[in-house]
Structures are given as C-alpha cells and as structure tokens.
Length: 109
Length: 115
Image (cartoon, rainbow over all chains, first blue to last red; front, side, top):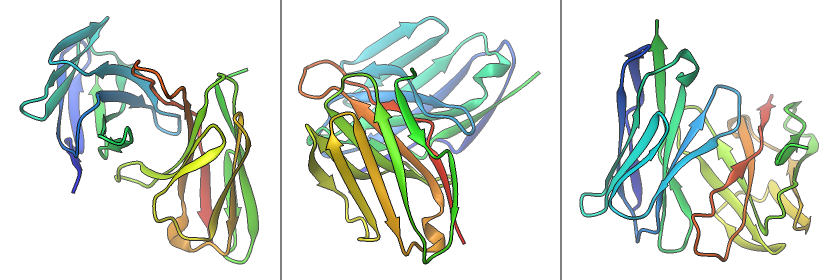
C-alpha cells in the first residue's frame, strides 16, 4: 500500500528553527508537496520538490531525498503565525496526491 | 474574487435530509476535486473531474453524488448520510496536463455535521 508518515504534533519556540520530517512509500513518484493549513482554513501551497536537494523560499525550505523516500520542511525564525498544521503529499505514478495526516506545529512565546 | 469558493461554510443535517455542497473556482483550471478531511486523518480523495469528466471515484458510498456541470463548478449532493460522514469537505482545483508542479488550490471547506 501507499503510505506517508509525519509526526502528529511538534512544539517549538518563537524565533527558533523547526524541522518537520516526512517519509513516504508510494507506487511511483512525481513530486512532493508541502501545504500549510491554519485551523478552520484551507490548505495553502508552500513548496514542491521533484529533484533531490533543498528548495529555499524565504523562511521556509524543503528538502527531498528520493532514494530514501524522505523529505523535510524547515521553518526558520519562527513566528506565532506559523502555528498551523503542515501537510506532506506525494504525487504517485497515476498523478494522484497521496496525503499524510499532517503535523500540528505549536509555537510558544 | 478569491480563487476557490465553497458554500455553505457550515451545514448541520439529519440523516434523512438531502443537501448539496457547492464549489466554484475562478482560476481557469481544468481539474476539480472533492476531499474529505477528518480529524487527525490524511485527506481522503473522493472524486476527481478533468475537463468535466469524472476520472476518479475512490470507492465513495453512493450517498455522495458529485456533479460537474462545467469546468468552474462542482457540486456534492448528499442524501441519507451517517453520523460518521461528519467532517470537513474540501474542494480543490488545479491546471492539469502540463509538466509544471500543478499544485492544487483549495477552498475553505464546508464543515458538515450529521445528527
């Protein structure tokens, strides 16, 4: 079967750095997505990786290792508004998105 | 006008009611999706429409019936639901067929409670 694993919940301090990991086992691979979802709101696109390596976008970076079936989302200089759930999703060989259950990130002052 | 809109935002219905959820996208996309989001569970893909044609139906019970009259509008008709159908129902759209990452854009969802 297809599976996406990510931690259920993480806590970090305002101003710090946090890394949210995602491991996947899917039938084929056509890219990995990270989405942010604030409570009661729509998921919004953060990043996309299809080749190995690091993609940086402001305070957020996403890393991919296809050989290890592994990605992480790195958030720097954490702000209170970063408190949200972060969803990892992999596009499989049929170009369908397989989703993880999401990681709830709690930021403390 | 925001990219993807959904109405209603909240819906409470009894098990014998019939209701419909509406989604509209203003992004010119050619694919639309219905997802079910339950607490602490992955997003569950329910239906996919490409160019108004249904391409995926992931073993969804017949009490959920989708309708896509054109590439901008998507409906989910509900009848004789069960309490376990209570969840957040998300609509999304994307531009498929290209080689780009084609991310999905989501609406704010309809919070459905079945009594």
